[in-house]
Amino acid sequence: MMRATLVAAISCGLALPAAAGDLALMVGLRSVIAAAIRDDGYNCPDVKRMVDLGPDNWGSVLKITCGPVGRDETWDDRPLRVTAYAEGDFSTKPWREQRLQ
Image (cartoon, rainbow, N blue to C red; front, side, top):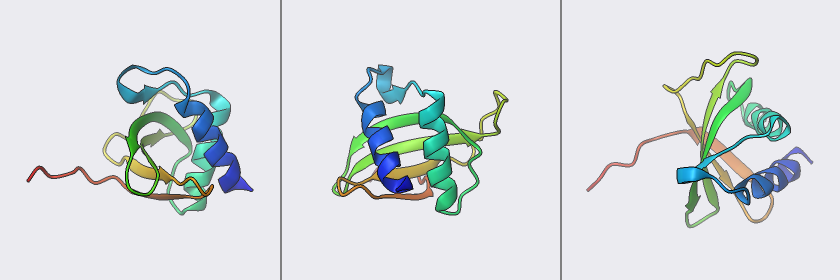
């Protein structure tokens, strides 16, 4: 149920206009995504930033930055890669910068 809710929330969020891929986050969307990330075993009290990087071969890729609830602090040193799949599932893992060849 949580995963289906997350995919629906992300899909709605991705439909919103955003400059340079940085998505404006509503409080409800932030809390749903943060809960789903925690379900995958990562520390994410609150989603502070979500950047839509577009699709890859498997789903829609999001770069997520978390931080503490109720404070402006962000944990920029530990972003997460969340992939939302068309089947209604998702995966979370640490962000790795792509190396140019």
